[in-house]
Each structure stands twice: as structure tokens, then as C-alpha cells.
Image (cartoon, rainbow, N blue to C red):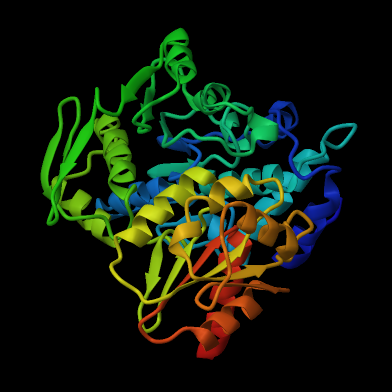
Length: 432
């Protein structure tokens, strides 16, 4: 049984330990969960959806922390360091905290006559859950990695499930229609437990599945809602009203939808985890999440957004329109080859003057030449004021954009997590 003194070699080992990166199904991970004796003594929130999962987790976490609860939050993927995937009380878990739980999972995996093979995500999710189970928490928040029904996170029977939005992404795994994807996302619902969906037009498959298993389905527009003006907003649920709420610290067009979903989850769970109106306000104001329409201070304006499917790109386009006037918009973009790149670009092609297309440090990435073909196919034309360039890395692309952009322009960095992570790393280098 291998064991390593630090986290880095563990992660390197896990990257090659299982024959394929994504291997849907709960049989293998379920066996190891049993061998670990993994259970939670506190309420668990499971959050799935195409977009908005990370934001909803961050808002839920911030409000529960403001109320004084001890909270564990597991999200993925990470931007700069693996440890970002595990937070306890708002703090990123240290290597020292994580290591014993990596060893526990490896030991459980190898306790069978034939050791159980786990993917990187399955193994690390179990390790983080095991850490949370040992940490005396009041609440646990688990973000679904991919889909829902067959995702590693779904080995836990959640106390409250949230599905944020349903759109086409990961079609080769989840299906190529909203109905097929809705069924996969609804797989996190449980009989008799709150099942919250904040998609304004949920697929019928999700509603049918909730009814079939007799989950307590909360639909946006029917069971909960929000209203807002420029200054403040209000939430209305089944029996809870919250008026004069400040806007969430997370910026962007969809954040009220995500905040309403988080408040519906808290309303549904308030007998076990009461949160006062004041703590809700404090939590909404304190929530943080890098790379979700994150506007950095200074000039030129820099926007970071991990929008990597057409639905998220449409929201990013709306958010850019609401920012006001900039003479030129410079965009650093890199994406995975299995994404609907044409569908992503069509929402932004008329909002961008200069494109800086980037390769990414993974074999799954689309080559800059491919991105350029898709951009031209989407209708982008170069002239004296419009250009396309290709780069070997997001860092190089960003440095070139910085060189060209004037103070009153804006630079938008979007696409894969790798694109945004590369630019965050470059900015850190510049500061030190």
C-alpha cells in the first residue's frame, strides 16, 4: 500500500492510479465508503447544476458561518491549489489536515482481496468527506462534480438537495438534451427530503423524478421567489419572508437566483439549522468565490470568469453589457476541446475587439488554431480595430493583453478553470 509524506506525491499518484479520468457509477466508491464506515452526524446539503453550483455553495457556507455554525464545504475543481476543494469554517484545509484521510481511504481501498480502483475525484472526495466526518461539524456542503445520479458525492444521502440550473454540458456523459441532463441532476434528490430547483424552466424529467420518489420539491416561482430593485432585494419562500436584503458580494446577473436557492435551502432546513435574518444579511455580504464574474480593482479593469459552456457565456455577455462603456475589450480565452466552443463564442463575438487565444496545460484543451477557426466561423472579422492572436499559455496571452490595453479598456479572462488559474498565478508573480 503506497503512502506519501506530503500531498503533492499523493495527487500525482492518483492522477494515474485509475485507467480513466471520469468513470461514472457508485459501485466502486460505495464499497470503499462502507469499508471506511463513513457517515455524517450533521445535516448535509448537496448542490448540483450546470452553472451556479460554486456560487450557491459559497453563499450557503457564508450564511451558516455568519450564524456561528461549524461548516465543511467541498467544491471542485480548484483554481491554484488542491486544498481549495476542502474548507472548514471558511478556512482552506492544510496538507497536514488532509494527509491522514488520504491514508485512511487508501487503507480502506486496499482492504479488499482485490483493491478497489478509484478515480482522482472519487478518492479525493472520499478523503475530504472523511476529514469532515471527523471534524465535529454542524453542517456539510457538498458540490456535485459531474451530473448527480452517478457522481461520487451522491454516495451520501443528502438532507437537502439543490439543483441550480440545467443546461447542455458534458453531453457525452449526461446526454444531449435538457430532459436527459435534468434526470441526471435530479438523482441527488431523496425521498421525503427538500429538493430545491432554482432553474426558472426546469425540465419535466426533474419534476417527474422528484414526484416519483416523493421528494419535497421546491420550485422557483412556485415555492420561492425573489424581487429586487437597484438598491436591495427580497426573498419570499413557503413561510419565510426576508425583505431589504443587500445584494450578494458575488457579482453578476444570476447571483440573486443562486442566493434565492441558498435561502430556500436554509428555509427548508431551519428547524435543524436556524439562521436569523441578520446572519443571512451578513453571510450574503461576506461570500467570496474567485473566478465568478470577479472584477479586479485597478486599471485597466480585469474580469475573471470560469464561464465554459454556452449558458454561462450568455450570462457573462449580459454581465459585460451591464458594466458600462469601455473603448476596447480584450479577451483571453482557452477552453477544453469537448466543449461547445462555437456555442460559447456566439454570445461574446460582438462584444470583443481583441482576442488572445490560449493553449492550456492539459491534453484535453482545444488548440488555439481550433479556437480561431471557431471564432471566425462565429462571425468575428479582423480589421484595424479587431484582432486575433494565439499564445502557448494564458500567462503569455494575458501579458500581451496588458501590454496593448489602455487604462480605460477592459481585459476579460474566461473559459476553462485553467485559463483563469494561469492568469491568477501570473498576477501573483507580478505582486511578489
